[in-house]
Image (cartoon, rainbow, N blue to C red):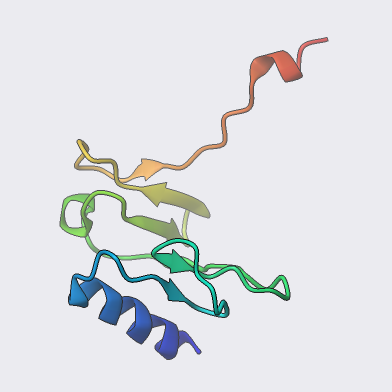
Length: 94
């Protein structure tokens, strides 16, 4: 299954087709890559990479096994940025 997902993603990225929509576990994709399954098993797993953020390019994401954190690369940055949840402070005031 991992190899199939990788091949599909790799094929879509290499093809350069911007108007095609691909569904994995979904016969009616609503966006370019739609992995929402009808039965609720829609997890997407990210792994670590040894690429620099610059080499990976804007929009790239990774999971670092050593820090147990998700990271992403922003358009203007050259470093991996930690993906943090920001909770509105007013929800936690007493």
